[in-house]
Structures are given as structure tokens and as C-alpha cells.
Image 1 (tube, rainbow, N blue to C red):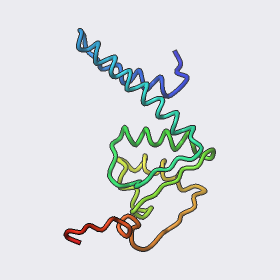
Image 2: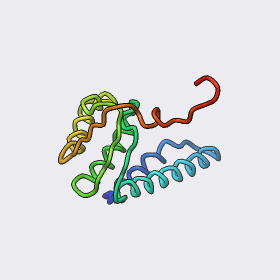
Image 3: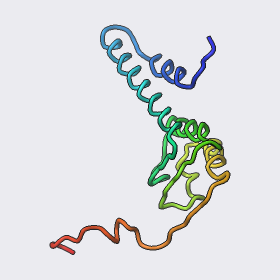
Image 4: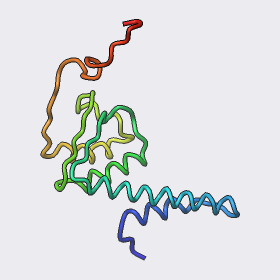
Length: 136
């Protein structure tokens, strides 16, 4: 049977490793529920008019997360905007992905027709944080 969406493959993949018995049945229902939530989240991320990702490249991501992120970026490529904020330079972003092929595919799509705005100076969060009577 030919798969029509990435979502159906995702659900099948997540529900496959379940074993036998009552606990496995509960686990399978939980996995399918989580997979459905994942498919809905994926659809929302793809269809949103603007997708804003704050603190991008804050920490490394695993292979599955990189594949999921690639799917979102690829589906939105040349159709919808993605706005990324990061405290790291764009050339440092490669270090968060698990392999260079994934990094290249994602960065190629993100960088194509991108507009980079570099803001220098003190962090607004730091600059406007509340002053405490004790200690500061």
C-alpha cells in the first residue's frame, strides 16, 4: 500500500515496536495518541502563516528531531515564512545537527532567499529585567 502522507508513516513507525499483552496494548494506544498529536503539530507548523522559532540553535538536537525539523522546513520552503532568532552566529548552527548531510539540507533551505538581521548590544531581557531590592 502506497503511503499518501508522511504522517501515516510516522504513526506506523511509532506503533510498530509494541509487544504483546495488556501493557503493550496500553502502550500502543499511548504511542498512537502521541503520533496523532505529532501529526497535528506537524500540520500546524507547516500551515501557520508565520513560524517564529525563538532561541534557535540553543542546544544540539537528535536525529529524529532533525528529521522532523527538516520536514517542517522543507514543506514551508518557498511558500511560507520562517523567522528564527538566535544568540549564535548562523555559521555556528551546523553544530546542532547530528550529521553534515542533514545540516546542509536544512541550512540550504533556510538560507535561500533569507534576510539576516544582526542586532548588537546588550540583551533586552538582561537590560530590562526587574531590579530586586536585595543583592542588586
